[in-house]
Amino acid sequence: MKPHRLKLTHHLLLTYGMYRQMEVLRPHTATAEEMERFHSHDYVDFLRRVSPDTEQELEKQMSKYNIGPYSDCPIFDGLYDFMSNCAGASLDAAVKINHGVTDVAVNWSGGLHHAKKGEASGFCYINDIVLSIVELLKYHPRVLYIDIDIHHGDGVEEAFYTTDRVMTCSFHKYGDFFPGSGAYSDTGAKAGKNYSVNFPLKDGLDDSSFESIYKPVIQKIMDKYQPGAIVMCCGADSITGDRLGCWNLTIKGHAGAIAFAKSFGIPVILLGGGGYTPRNVARCWAYETAVALGEEENLDDDIPWNQYHNYFGPNHQLHLTPDTALRNMNTKAYLNKYTQIILQQLDSLDAAPSVQFQDVPPDYSDPEERIRAAQDEADPDEKDNLEHKRHHEAEYYHDDTHHDTNPFISYQTGTECGGFVPIDESKPTDTKPI
Image 1 (tube, rainbow, N blue to C red):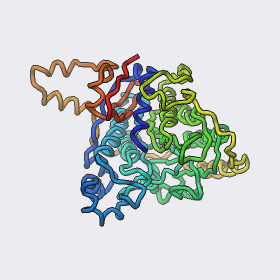
Image 2: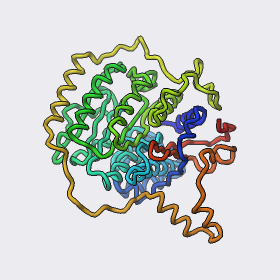
Image 3: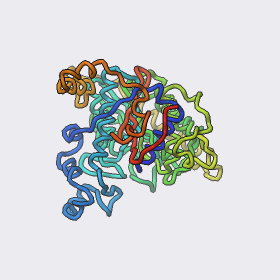
Image 4: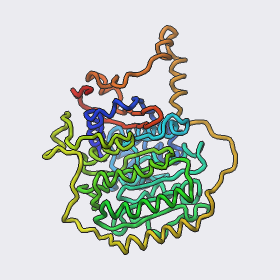
């Protein structure tokens, strides 16, 4: 989960020239109030106060919030700011979707699907996915969440387990594997009964097996549920060669899930997630950015030279070869059994649930409003420049000074593809536009 994988992804987007088809945006830093739309006040306040310097002072509270040296969520400098930026990017993505500014938005730093209302879990501290879905629900009566990370999306499922306004669908390794949840029988409760979909899988899942279950399940969901927007957690720990994963998906097989979701023509937010072999995470998310742009056929398998070229050795190629020694434990009979169980669950649903008319809360993250506020506060002599300025597509890349002003840069392209891709440029770089 180290930010370095975001830096590698960023440089692949630059060297492949994909940024030329994207308009650069800077996502805002989410406020405590915004994050408390889901998380408890006490928890957010603890995240704000905890740091390596205050670790001893707050030691008694660490176990309560599952943070610290004895958990899977360590304390590090800048924790609160980093999580606030991740959350802000996902909120901005939702607002752009709500306002019809873009059809696809991307935030590869997001996808922190394990975080709970009042505790961290699995390297996830703030659940940006839940926050973005809550924002989408202001404009869309129904939202579909798809999780193709190898780990079950437990935090998102838990948040919407009793509502029919969000359907969660997770394809994950199940059994003696973190977080241990996600049985096929976990289908929701109360008004959310049958609106949680879980496909439990075994080691060695390959492209053909994944496609054989993914497409019929998602097609049935789209037919029955008719969502107004889709949010996807695209964790790259489900591709071959991951340090913690145990599946055998190629990058194309993983990206096929995105292409299929995008084919329905409704707005999609693509978020990151797990992935513990950074060079492969960057490969995966760079290719999936191309899929979002519809440019995947134009990507050369030979990675262009960049500052981190040696990380992609020894073959310096974009795509990965499946591990022939990894056996696929998901037999055809096993996959057919659970596909039928899930399709029957979806058949039991009535027509797509409706929503009563009600006042729409104000946007918690409105980029246009922030621009207007900046104009109001600007020097009168500079207002004209602010109002008419349009950022050049390579503005932040033509010299080294731009790389360190803000560690989070976001991308968007008109009504085709938007994206929020935070980067961590802690060191200067000599990468130029190509």
